[in-house]
Amino acid sequence: MATPSSPNLSLFSILSESKRILNAHSRHFLALCVLFLLPLSFSLVVYPTLLNLITHPPPDNTKVLLRSFLSFHHQEEDQPIFSDTQFLSILYSLFVLAFSILAIGSITFSVFHGFYGRPVKLISAIKSVFLSFLPLFVTVVITQVVFSMTVVAFGGFLLLVTKNFELYSNYFVIFGGVLLVLALVYLQVNWSLACVVVVVESSWGFEPLRRSASLMRGMRKLGLSLFLFFGVFGGILVWTCGAVSQLDIGDSEGWKSWGFVVQIVVTSTLLMLLLLYSAAANTVLYMYCKALHGELAVEIAEEFAREYVSLPFDDGKVPHVISVVVG
Image (cartoon, rainbow, N blue to C red):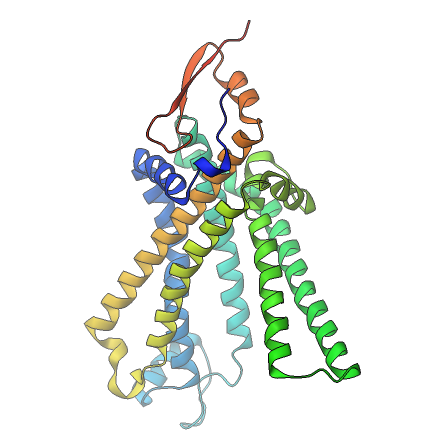
C-alpha cells in the first residue's frame, strides 16, 4: 500500500477532503449542526453581550424584564442585576463543555465513517456520542488539568527565579511568557487527535494523549497549521463578539436593532461552520496519520476485502487506487 509522506500533505488537502465528506452527507451534518453546534456557537456569541447587560444594566424597563426572566428579587436601581456572576459563569462553562463534547463526538463518528464511504445515519451518530460522552469528558478534564499544572508550575518557577536571583525585568517576564505559550502550543498540537482517538478507538484518560502524540510524529507541522488556521479565525470571531458586547447598548438600545441581530446571526453561523470544519479536519488528519504510519492498510484489508478502494492521498488530484485481496 502506498502511504503519503508528510511533505506531500498540506492544509489545503486536509480541508479539501473534509469538504468532500461534509458535502457528501450535507443533510446529516446540517442536522448535527442544528442539534449541537448552533446552540454552542450562539452561546459563545451571545454570552459576552448578556454578561455586559447583567453587569451594566440598561434602563429600568429592561432591568425589570431581565430580573423577571432570571428570577431575581428586587434590587436597588443603581446596582447590577447580579452582585456576583460566578454562578452564571459556571453554568455557561458547563453548557459549553457539554455541547462541545456532544458536537465533537457526533461529528468525529460521522466523518470517520464518511471517510470510508459508509452510510452515516443520524440515529447512529447520536447513539455513539452518548456512549463516548463520559470518556471524552474524562479525557478533556485530564487535558485541562495538565495544561493548568503546566501553567502553575511554570509560573511558580518564574516567581522563584525572579525572587531569589533578583532577575526581575519586563523582558525576562515576556521571554518566560513566550516559552510558556510555545510549551502549551506544543502540547496542544501533540494532543490534537486525542478526542478522535477516544471516539474511534474507544479509549480514555491518558491513553488517547499518548496515542495522539504517537500518531502526530512526522505530522506536527501540519497539525500546527490546522491549529493556527482555526485558532486565528476563531479568535477573530470571538474578539468581534467581545467588541460588540463593549458597545454602549444600554443607552442606545442597540441590542434591539436589526443590525445587532443580523450581526449575531452571521457571527454564530460563521463560528458554527468553523467548528464543524475544525472537527472534520481533525478526523481527516487522524486518518492521514494512520496511513503515514502504515496502520490504515490493515483496516482496509479487514473492511474492504476483495474490493477496490480509492483514498484521496497526496495532493488530492490523482488518488491512489488500492487493490485489496484477502486469500
